[in-house]
Every structure is written in structure tokens, then in C-alpha cells.
Length: 476
Image (cartoon, rainbow, N blue to C red; front, side):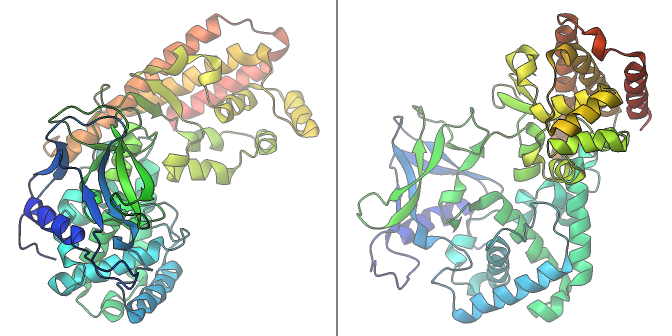
């Protein structure tokens, strides 16, 4: 796919088209406008990045950009022929058979997502012949929207993601790469798409990057709307809302609405949810580690070696709380679902690292690692895994040791030269996690010192087992 105009110029032209009723559907709206853009904003940037900025101040609650849902590109769009819909469904079945799809990069279990991705891929291959070409001219090239999992494939930069290997998203990236290798070897791309394999593979990777960063859940790829960038919750100034398109009574739309007063010259940033710095980079391909931008963050422990060091009895006790190998794997390769992540606010443990700010599953894991066999059997017999108050200090101490062991792992200097901007960004994320883990270790130790340890939970046998587990983590 090659652009024939600058993305800013293409965005302005696309706005006019949408306002004049493009794309034409059989939805009965005639030539009614399908988009509304506040006169107080404009498009700025270059071919690598286009964003929406204010020209004048915007009040909280004001609509900034609104686009009709019928203008969205997805597998059920009325603009698609029946043949194209059927083709996308058939190809999706082949893709599901070819890969395990462990992660959310190509989530084959998400109804319609894979089909929509393959529809987008065909439109990308069609280029200027695509009915969606006015929209495709506004999207970034593959090199500018690649996620860390795609950096080596799209950019040929195998070093850029190296700093992320030991972070909370490292396992997810490796799972993505495994999925992609299985897919490329399992699909006859020239036979399925009728073009050279490298051309088809490049179009697929571009479509994965676009769909991952631009699909609005339940709507699809929304022309013009997706030119707005996003930010983690707390650093945004606009949010996605659904109602009738301004100036109409019956055209459902997706809209960006100001959640706070926005001054002239500011960028519009949509709310992308509560994500850690590593997770934001993994999901969207960029991030700022500035605490002013990322007020809320999360850090994670290395769970695989912790789980490997547990006994069968300990795992049975954890199963009482539905903490199983499957739950752990989901947290590792789907980092958005990490139930063990420790929260940070402005770079410091949330609520000063109080006991209640530690996720319950992590408290339960620490308790099981500290407990003697009698306590574990009691939990299994009762079908309930409580963490007694008397054990808080010892559990907090063990969690602190785990945090310190993890931070030492992240402190190992990467040998790759930090020349590329992506590598530098990945290295900053790694350092953010290391500093966050150290902050949590300190907070947990203070919490342990301020608590009273019940003698019944401090047996020599349990103490020895805890030291053995920590030693295992340090050499893993």
C-alpha cells in the first residue's frame, strides 16, 4: 500500500468525504453527514504521526469528533460484498487451524476480530483499488505502528525488544513470536491471497498492527476517529462515548467527548484504560515513562520460577482459590489480565504499600509459600484460602524478597546499543519496572517490621522452605 498524499491532507479530505455521506451504504441515510468534527480542533503532524490538537479551548463535556458507526470498517460492513465477507470467514477458519493464538495479538477467540483483520488485510492489498482507499491513506505505514512483538518482523530490528525480555510483557512477546512463526509455516499465503508470499505477509503484519492499535471494541476501525492518540487513565482528556451523531436523531455514532477542560494547543488524548508502562508499550507500540504522563503504573513479579518451586500440596491449596497453572499462564502471556500486578501511583506503591493494596492472589501465593503442610491441608479441607493476620509480616517479607530478586534480574545491563528510539523506549520501561519493584520491596519490608508475627506461623520448617524458595528464584 502506497500513499499518494500526506496523511494530514488525506485526513482533511476524508473529513469532507464523511461529512458528505461517504461511504455510501444501503442504510437509508441518503447523503446525510457521517461525521462531525469540532471547529476547535485540527489535524497536525507528518506521515509518521498524525494527531488531533485544539485550536481553541474546549469545555468539559464537549463533543470533539464523532463518526457514524456505519462508516466503520469491519467484517460485517455493508460496504463489503457478500463474496468478500465469505472469503474473510473462510480465511479466518484456516488461520484458526494454523495457530495456537495464545495471546491477544491475533485473538482468534474474539468473535469477528480475526475476520475484520483479514478484511482489512485484503483492503491493504487492494491499495488504490480498495473502496476504503480514502481511509487507508490516513493510516500510518507499518513501520510507524508496529508493536514490540512485530519490531523484528516489520523493522528488521531484532535488538529493539531485547530490554523487554525480562519485563512483565517479555513472555507475551515471545508467545506472539511463536504464534507468528506457526502461522507463517502453516498457511499457504500465495495460495490463500493470490500474491507473492512476502507481499501477503507484509500486508498481514501491517493489518495486525493497525487492528491492534485502532479497533474500537464492538465497532471496528473508525475512519478519522482513529487519528486521535490515547493515554492511560488519569493522563487522558477525552473518552469514547456512544450516542446519535450531532445534527441527526437516528444515526448511531462513536464520539470523543472531553472529560476535562482542554486548553488551546493541547493534544486530544483518548482514555485507553489502566495499563502499566510495559503493557501500554506492548499494546500500542509507544509509551512515555514520565510520571506526569503515567500516573498509575503496575509492576509484576516473575511468576514462572515461583510456581516451579512450589510443591504439589502448595498447588492444591492455591487451586482452592482458583489459582492454577492456567490462571498463571494467562497472567503471563496476557499481561492486561495480570491479577498479581502491584500498583504504583506517581512511581510509588499505591496507599504507601499497605496490605490491602497488594492483590489478593499475590497475598495468597505468598501465604502458601510460607505455610507449613498442616495449614495447607486445613485450607484444602475448608475449601477456603484465607491469609491470617498473624502471617502478614512473614508474607510481606517474602514478597519483598521476590521483588528484590526480580529487580536484580532487570538490573542486568542489556548488551544492545541504545541507538534506536524503540530500544531506548524499551530500556526506559525496563528501568521503570526495576525502580517500581524496589519501591515495593522497601514498602513491604516496612510493613513487615510494623506487624506482629504470630509464633504459630513462624515454624523453623516453614522458614527453611521459604529460604529455599527464595534461593531458587535468585538462581533461576
